[in-house]
Image (cartoon, each protein chain N blue to C red):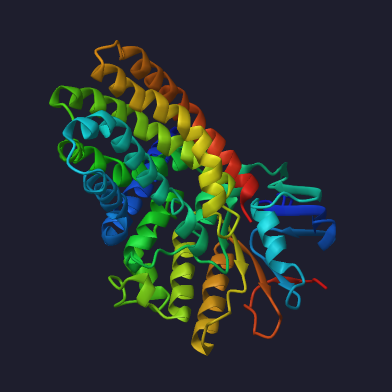
Length: 208
Length: 232
């Protein structure tokens, strides 16, 4: 990749209002391959809304979003971004493996990944056939992380990935994000700033 | 882009993955899934008890009663079409998937129809026997239901998609869906009524069929757009 390559995701004077009430912005940001953008802000500062706007779930009130230098379309966002939200999208009645198999069927699979290996990476070995309902909150988060690892999207939009995780889990998130970014991926991570962050090239955007 | 060649394959596999997941979910929640069937069975079996043993009267109202029971049983399970997907976040994942949302919605409608209408269609002969319906009318009743129930599922899906962002939208859903259901009911039950009186009934069936073709094409598109607008 040449240094002049356009960033994976960029936003220009992006703002969002809900019922005339400003939620965030206007702000500008960009994330290139090989780096992480940390979005810090307290509760209610609009972190989740920002991520949902960037993912295309909500239309921005003002501003423009670009994917790889092109105006963002639903398709280009879908192929570039994978969202790990507060709601993880698991079906409680399905087992861990069935949930992941569905995610892979819907989005495609990253080359060289394997569901069993990924479950082992996130510390869920032995839980392959447990219904997602029976997993603890932290384990569900790990299952969401496993989904990100399996999808082909280079940019991860992670909404409070550290919530519900134990110290080992937080270290795991950082490890996984580091590996992803060192492999040419990128991540956009929201948090309220109280956790150790991955040891990669990262910038911080403060929301207030 | 090179992606185009495998894009169609992955769209097909995404639809298959969704169909497989939703059918598996129907199976794992089969207690809930049997609700429309039990509802239709209850309604139809209560009529003879309420009206008393008058075979002629029962035979006369049978097409209407069966049609209403099937229609309401479908409406009953319609509310849950996107509910659990919304609550656990998988609706977001569907909307963010690189596949056309309309196709994915169409898959969900298909599963809804398979789970709620097909079991009822299979016991229609039993329902008809409860109400002393003339056996010669059974094929017409079956055909009208076969054309009408997918139409109801498709039209209902648009309404559910519009109200997906609202909590406790059951009341609103019924109010919005019923006016759209009325024409289907009139043509569906009307075809059987006409056949019972020896009148030509093919016209009503053709109209149902034409409406079904239109709905198969348009309803998923409308529902997908409605979902994007109504997503909270």
